[in-house]
Image 1 (cartoon, rainbow, N blue to C red):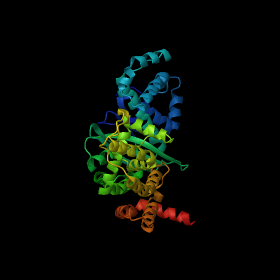
Image 2: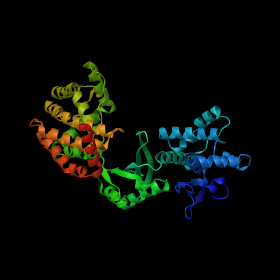
Image 3: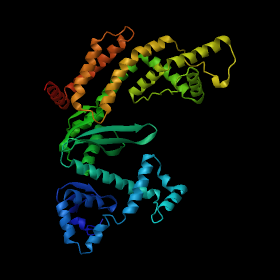
Image 4: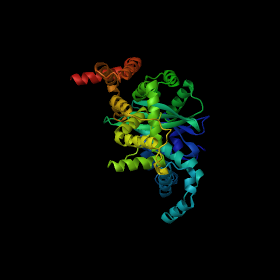
Length: 442
C-alpha cells in the first residue's frame, strides 16, 4: 500500500512491520486497513475527528484530491449495497460461498439489477464479508470510545470440525445508561492454553483500538485455561452464572439413578421423533382428543433442554401410557398388528412410578430453569447473582421435600455450597450485590 496514494496519510501513519495497520496521528489509536483499503480510516476521521475532516474538505473543494475522497464516500454505493445485501442473505441462511454461483440466483440478480454485477464467491470471501466485519468493528469501537466496558469470552469447538473458535463479546453502558452487547470478534484457535487465549484477546483489543485498561471485568466459564488467561491479562473475572447453574444441575443429572432414568425417557423420545413413532404419537393424541404435540429431545450442552424433555414427556403422560398399554396388550394377546402400529419391544418398560418421579423432580428443575433463563437475558445484572444463588440454596434447605426427592435436593445444596464461595469472594460481584442491597433498603 503506497503512503502517497491517498490524502488520508496526512492524518495516519502506516505502521512499520505491519502492512495492514495504521495509527491515527490525532488520537494514537491503531486501525486495520486490510487489502489496501483506507475506507475504515476515512470513516474514523469523519466520525471521531469531524472538525479536522471538515477543514480538509473545505481546503480541497476545488482540487482533484476531492475526487480521490469520493471513491471512499459513495461512488460505487449501489454496487456496494447490493454486495452487502447478498452477503447478509448468505450469512443469515448459513449458505456456503457457492450460493452466489447458482445460475438461478445470477439470472434473478441480473434481471433485478441489470446495471450491477453479482460478484463471484472469492470476492465475497476475500473482500465483501471482511469489509462488512471491519465496518461493524469500527462502529463498535467508535461507540465505546474511551468508556469502561466488560468482556465475555468463550471457546467453541466440534470434534468433527475445525478450527476451534474463541468468541469475544463486549458489554458497554452509554451516557444514557443504555446497555450495548456486541459480538466483537471470533478468533480461530489452534491451541487452547491460557497463554494462547490471553494473547488472542490482547491482540484483538489492541488491533481494534480498544484500551485494555478500560476493561472492568471478563465473564468466563470455569475452565482452567480461561481462568489462567484472565490472570495473565490481569483482569478481574468471574464465572458465568448460567454456566455455574449448568454444572450444578449436571451434578444432579449425572447421579446413577437419574442417569438411567433419563436414558429411558430419551429412548422413548427418540422413537417418537422417527417417522413411525411420530405417526403413532399423533394418532393416539387424536384418539384421545388431545392437541398434537411433538416431544422435545435434549441437548447435552444445555441442561435445561433435558428439563424441557422431561417436562413435555410428563405432560404427555396420558398419551404415552396409552401407547405403552397398547404395546403390552399386543404382547399379551399375541395379536397381529399393522407395521405402522409397531412399537419396538426393545423400548424400556414404563409404569406409573416413572411419572411419579417426573412429577416430583420437574418442579425443582423448573426453579433452576427460571433462574437460568433470567440470567440468560441481555437485561440481566451482576448485582443479583450472589443474592439469587443464596436465596436458591436457602429455599432448598428450608423446604420439606418428600423422601423420594430429598436425596436429589441434598446433591443440589452441596453443589451450590461448593461453588458459591468463589463467586461470593469476587470483588465485582460482592460490590454489586452490596449496592443492590443498599438500594433495596432505600
